Length: 139
Image 1 (cartoon, helix red, strand yellow):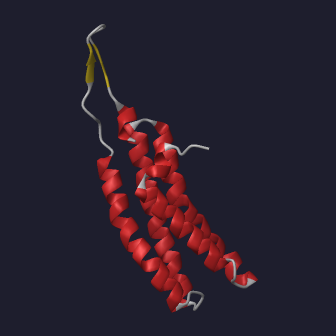
Image 2: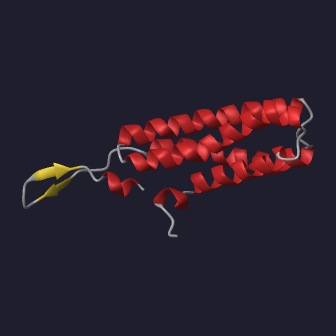
Image 3: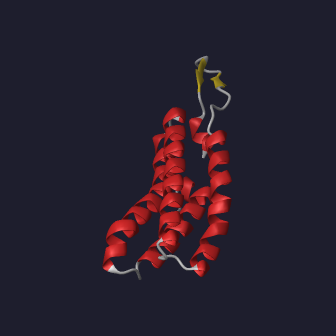
C-alpha cells in the first residue's frame, strides 16, 4: 500500500510515534488507571495524528488549518494527561525520558506546520483565463 501525502510529514510521523509509545506504556497499567487516565491519554494522543490526517484530506486551506489547531489542542491535552500520569506515579522516569524529546520536537513542528498552511499563488489557465488555487501543492 502506498503512502498518502500526510504520512510523509515529519509532524505526522512524530505524532504516530508518541501515540504508539503511550499505547505501549498504558497497556501495562492496572484496570483503574487504564479506565481513567489511560483511555483519555490514548485518545488525545491518537487525536493529534488523526486531525493532521483529516485536515490533509479536506483540501481546503481553512479546513486544513482548523484541523491543525485541533491537533495542537489534542497535543496540549496529551501533555496534561502525561502530567497527571506522572504525578500519580503511573509514568516512570524512563517513560518521561523517552517521551519528552519527542514532545519537545512535535510542538514547534506542529506550529510550523499550521503556519505553513496558507494559500499558494494562483495559476492562470491561459486557455480559459480562469484563475484557480493550487491547494493540492500544499501537501
